[in-house]
Length: 255
Image 1: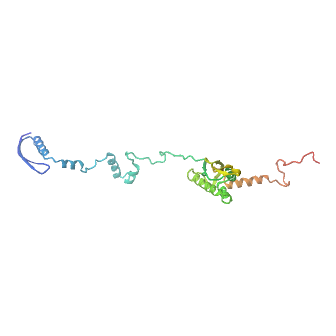
Image 2: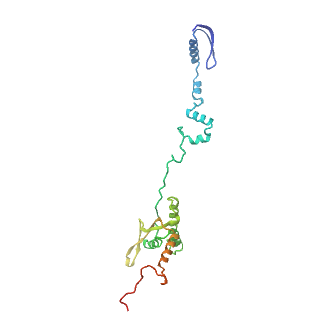
């Protein structure tokens, strides 16, 4: 490159002009301008340049997605739904989606809290509701005169709700399959005064009831089976011959 002899005006970052004569190549001129500008460099300006907002670099994945949208392949909303964060399109077909099979529960166990009652008295209530549909058991507890039936009725209603909501069981087929009673963990014992300066131990019992709900036959199915069973027992008066075994045949030795 040919030598150049000219005046170059280099303005530093603070706006101070520096005029000097240079007889060198263009690269020499540029180096001297940078060196002169570095002498006027301010730390505050470095901070401003370091933390100043810059334009975000274009993502190649987003750029490609934008090109597809421009071509009319899909809209902006479809692109946002069908593309994941990694840039791969999500599979929306029903065949590729995994099938989740919910396992249906076969039973539901529930129990009351410990409350003050004898296990013998509570066991009579348990025998009353065992084997009955859940709605019939609730009705039995509603019209019973025993003191503990209000608590048992609330327990049965809660157990029915939980079995329906949490375990996806059919409420019309729920029956009280099992019901049993256990004693409480801590039986309160108190002194009971007796005659002649003696005393005994009085136990204040507490117990709780457990039930297991399972799906069985509905009330309509039970009525239908009972009706068919009764109809099978009906026989004619002999006008039509029936091919059925004799019931209670007479003894041959009676005369």
